[in-house]
Image 1: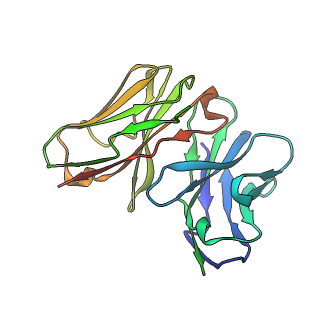
Image 2: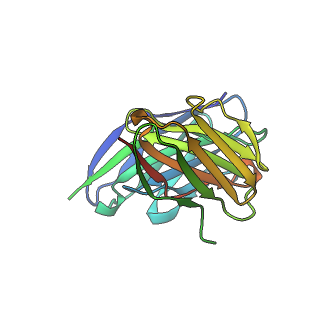
Image 3: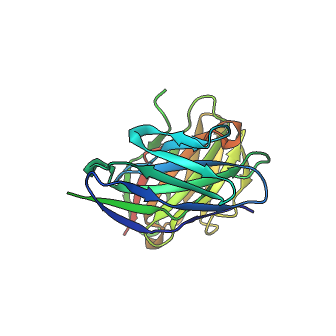
Amino acid sequence: AQSVTQLDSQVPVFEEAPVELRCNYSSSVSVYLFWYVQYPNQGLQLLLKYLSGSTLVKGINGFEAEFNKSQTSFHLRKPSVHISDTAEYFCAVIVNSGNTPLVFGKGTRLSVIA
Amino acid sequence: DAGVIQSPRHEVTEMGQEVTLRCKPISGHNSLFWYRQTMMRGLELLIYFNNNVPIDDSGMPEDRFSAKMPNASFSTLKIQPSEPRDSAVYFCASSYLRGRYGYTFGSGTRLTVV
């Protein structure tokens, strides 16, 4: 079965600084990878996804992530964060065949400090 | 499309009462998922349906919880009787192609059992 590890539960960062949120996964088969964002009192919103092709994926709000198969990682990055990026971020994985649901990490709380 | 619609947004009920949460998935999506989110346990998958058929309900915490999907455009999650420890935010999500393009989440129902 696949699993997802988000290495940091909380990440504080100053406004306009770069940020990287780390995600590692384990799976014996090929997977699709996702990042979701949850703003306070809202549902989860898809930020970006990796299905195939280029390993660098660009998403909404200036975020990007890089799929690294050898490292089994899918880290999320943004070169310059804003106060409005303060939220919970979830990494998720699903096998690209079969019928199993998305597996989510436990989330990383990004706090942007003015 | 209006997205995944959940109702009510907030529910406050007394212990022992029956609670029914409702979800309307995105038209054309054939999978539906119920999640529960708490500070202590994070995001938990309770049950999911494919083509209106329950596939895996192993995440349903107790027999007090039940879910139905009578047609492709409606699902309910019922708790009877409710207990204070059921207080949480309950999310519904839907997808197609078994979620390989990700899930779309509703805004959630915040349940408080007093």
